[in-house]
Length: 369
Image 1 (cartoon, helix red, strand yellow):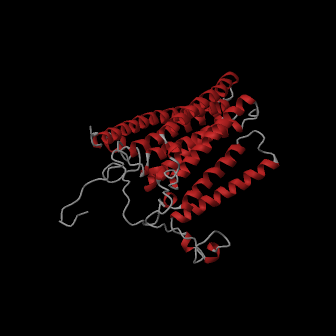
Image 2 (cartoon, helix red, strand yellow):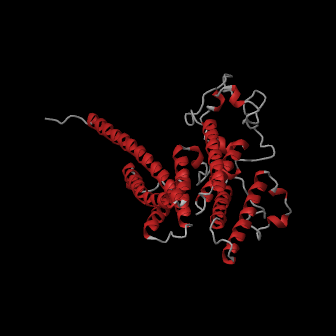
Image 3 (cartoon, helix red, strand yellow):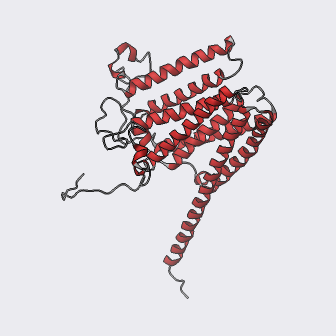
């Protein structure tokens, strides 16, 4: 890229200096690793919540899926932080993973979108909606199918409906990403089949200004990634515990209530950020002191609520209770670190306020005697 004087402009934008958080959604390898992480997480978390998961034949799969999940997350972190390219060459050899010509994995995408548009999910409202639908339907039938009495007819009906819906949603996403949706016969894309644009086909073109919504906020900011992880972990906390046969007891309902409430507030925060409504809230609601108190309160409530099912799971060898408690402890740590972040933010805001007051005092003319 050259400017008017013919000199090459090599300046990088200030944000994302050390981390490329868009790697996951802008490369095919990133999307593959994200799906692998989600599926392996569901594999060992759902199996670990079963009452007989302590058996050797089941613990083997739990161990394999957990180890795989750790390696996949490690790979994603190395990619995002650009540390993968600094690893010794034997670790990036083609025998370890599929690589490019220079012995390292080539994740650069060509300017044209070729056959796939992997950014469609995070750059369009329809893409985000389909992603949430896929995750929720997957959780619906996977959690219910892991229950010991899921073979009953009244439960098999929901499993069948949720599985069918999940398959159609994933198919829709694949057709959109591969640009095959536009090549379908017009009756299949008619407004009576799905919500359509003015010409009778689904319009996925986004205006360049992003108008009212910034759908990339979750994956382009550190706060967005933190909120996304908090939402997933709190969702796992109450969903795993709620699937247990004795979750109706008061000591377990407390954690279900706390985790559900926390999940709702986190999702509400994400929605307000994406729609740019957070900046329009009254200043007391966006003050760092509110975030500080809220995060530490949620951290304390989750710590108390998670200790009970974790202790009962250790005592009675109930892996589902133990798994829910572990997810609750992880949520506790996340909200605690976010509270520490709000402490620094509050101190920074207080310093700016004091500096502004000093400048006002200096600019005021001296009083006449």
